Each structure stands twice: as structure tokens, then as C-alpha cells.
Amino acid sequence: MHSLDGTIRRTISTSEFAGGTEAFRSACNAEGLFVHHAWNRFDPTVRGRRRTPLSVWITSAARDLRVALPDVDGPESVGFGTGAGRALLGRTPQLGIGRRHVYVGAAESGVVEVYALDGTPAGTRRLPESDLRVTAADLARAKRIDSLGQDATMQKETRRIWEFDTPPSTRPAYDAFIVDTDEHLWVRRYPAAGKDNTPWIVFSPEGVHVATVMMSAALTVYEVGHDYVSGIVRDPDSGRHAVVVLSLNRFAAH
Image (cartoon, rainbow, N blue to C red; front, side):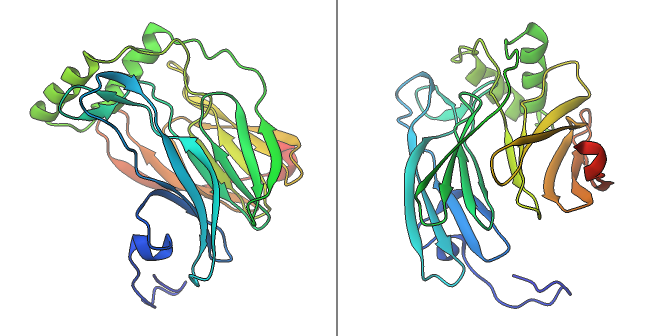
């Protein structure tokens, strides 16, 4: 862990800030609170596509807090007898945490569950209706992305996993959450094939849909400030990454 000037302040294991439990995915807020979900559990002898419930919990950097939240369906995986791999167009759970709320979503529908920091349910956020039907182009895009940067051996194994998969009829409802510095929740629609940009649905802290912001489908967002967006863009052909910072005009967005 570093201070803002780059000085190393301390080291910490992932299980330490997760309250003694290994977390697969985590998100944090500026006050040192974290929300986590557990590692995926699967029986490799069960073939085909499936999801299993995973525990979700809140901890603090001071290690003086642990709050359990309801389970969320884990990443969609494909069993092939001796192991499991990533499902094509698979749903993956998403987490976000701000100063007031925790956000948990399974990406099965356009609903995001909301909780207070003490674990009390605090309603939902619902994305506008959208056509999520899977096309042949969507499947081709998913295969290209899932095998991007793999050598010949890994690509062969990936194609073997696809043989056990039954692709879904709809794309995931979303695939990323970000809580910005002004406590707005940003939810990214799962990108559709043939579209350079994909919409981010923005909700106010009170749950009102206040904006839809179009950004590159190749952009992974790591932070949204009051007037900027920062993240990494991945080249769709080479897999190379570049850090970018984009300006954000909230008056225009609203």
C-alpha cells in the first residue's frame, strides 16, 4: 500500500483486508471500506454451463468490521470433466461501494441490489430496457476476446472448453460497476458486437437515472472523478494496453 506521493506505507495480504477470507473480487471506497465476494466453487465432473452462489461481505481496512450480505451468483463457468473454464458471454457478479451504499449485481438482469454499509437492504437500481439478444457477431467477438493473447496451446484448450458450452440467448445485462467521487453509480452495458462504444448508465446516490455516457468498448474504467475518467484501453488485435485519462463534462452528460 502506497501513499499518494508513492511512498510504501505497509504491505497487506488479500486475505488480511478481506477479514481473513480469500476474496476473488473486491471493491473499496475512500474511507477504507471494502466489499468482497468469494472464489467460485464448482464440481469439475459436472459438464456444461452453471453458476454457484458465492458469499459477499464488507470489511474495513482497520479490520474492525465484518458484515455479511446475501449471496450472489458467481461467474458463469463451463465444466468439462477435469476442470472448468470461462463461459462464452458468461455473466459475472459485479461489486461497488461508496460512502453510503454497497452495490451487488449478478448481471442476469438489469437489476442491481443496494445495501447500506451496515448490510441493511436499501432498494435496487434498474437499468432501462435494452435488446440483449445474442447474434452470431456477438459470439465471434466473445471468442476473439476470450482467446486474445493466448499461445497455440492455450487456444487449443480454450476451443476444447467451447465444445462443452451452450451459448446463451442473451448477453449479460452489464459487466462493470464504478462508484464515482460524487457517489454516482456507473453501470456498463455489456458491449454488443459491431459497436465501437458502449453505454454507461449513471445513477444518482438517490437512485435516479441521470445520464447515459457513451465510452469506448475497449476501455476498462478504473476511476471516475468529478471531471475525468481514467482507465486502460486494450488493443483488440494485439492485446496491448494503454493508460488513458478522459475529460468529463457533467453538465453535458446531464
